Structures are given as structure tokens and as C-alpha cells.
Image (cartoon, rainbow, N blue to C red; front, side, top):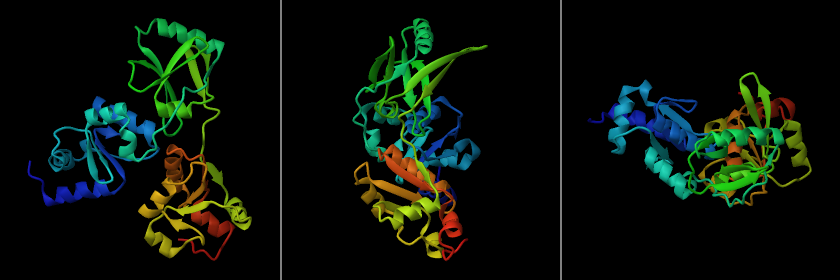
Length: 307
């Protein structure tokens, strides 16, 4: 189909809206086709935050994106404004490990993690494995540190762990996130319910404005990063912060993974997502300013304008 200027501008504005954009059927929480669901599953393992657009909600975009990308099917993945490909290409990039470079995620150098399986869980998992038709038991931990157990085919590049007689397969990022995990089971009227406790998982720390002020007063070294827009920063800013632009992003990503970084935005939501992104890159000392600059103005420095 011919791509109208209006549809082209609509598509380009969607692509510019985020660094990683997936045109799909449905949305991240409710994919409406198997191919879209497969790509979401891969991205969820790697990224805490990305954008999706439901092509079923806009017929113009649904057909227009095919012409724009010269690609006949949905889903379609864009990273940094560049077309990456559809489901098969994303799966291939994931299997070869190239997806880490494509998404700007540090590739893990994971060894097989230490995982504890209780006797109760081992008994149930061995029973389920016997009925699984030779399928492998996988433990996946996504970028939000949400774990999941499932039986499925072997996947390239996975690590294998044997714990209490139970064999588990993990992709490299899940292996890093699952270090020290405990798998337990309890009986319910509907059968066994499994719980995966990620005791060793890293988390974004929530710092109150007074806590961050204390760090500054003590002269402790950390990057204090403003993830708002340049227009918002012109209205109000916290002294000593730096606006997260491409240059600062590259500088931060080059830091040692033990470097301390505190993110802030207006009320704390955008900075939480930014902190989770850097956590997924392997940073271990990442914090979010709870309440954002608005809370800073109320609790620390009333000379900072509220808006």
C-alpha cells in the first residue's frame, strides 16, 4: 500500500517515543498472537522497560508499518530508531547472544548459579518432570526479577543446574539473577504451588530526599542523574544533578558496575524505570529518589520551584 504522509509521521512519532519500540498485536501484558508473545517474552527477560504499540487499534499503522519497514508481518522491533526485524530475527538474535548488543544490554558472563530446592519442591518437580514427555524444566527471571518455572524444549546457550536431584535450565541473564534462589512448594486444593525466593537478587534502593541530602553533605561520590526533559529541567533542577542525555548515558554505561548512581524525575516513576534499566545492565548500586524533585522541594530545598 502507498504510505500517506500522515501515517508516516504517525509511525515515526511512535518510533521516536522510546529507544525500544515493538509494533505488535495486543500489548506487553496481553499479546494477541503467538509471534508477538514470543518477542515480548524475550524483551521482558532483558529490559525492565520498553514501549509497545497495538497495531490492532489502528488500521493505518497496522498496514503502514509494513510498507514503512518493507517487512510484511507483525511484530516488528525498532531500537534507537532502526528497524531490527520480526519474530524469527529477534529469536535468532537471542539464541546467538547478539540481542545484547542490539539492545545495549551488557552480555552476562554467568556461571551456573547456586540454587536451593527444598525437599517438598524436589518431590513435586521430579513427579512433574516424569510426566513432561522429555521436556526440560526452565527457570526464567525477567528484568523486573519476576521468576517463572516452566517445562519446554531446550534453548541454545542455557546453563544447567542440578539441585536436590532436580535439573533446571537457565538463560545466562536468568542465571545471574537467580544466584542464591530457593525453590519451595506448598500444597493447595488445586495441587502444588511453587515459590521462587530470589534472596540474592539486586533491587533498586528507594532513597528519601533527606537520605540523598545526607550523602551530598558527607561528600560521598555518586552520579546524581536527572531523567526529565530539558524543558522540565529549565523550570526546576536540583544543584549537582546532570541531565540524562546520550553523552551522559554513554558515560554511565562505561562506569564500573559497582559505581553508585541515584536517579530522579518529577515524582519518581520515570527515574524508577531508568534505575531498573541500569540494574539490568549489571549495575549493583542503583537508587531512586523517592518522590522525585517534588519531594526534594518539599522536604529539603523549598527554593526549588514546584510545578
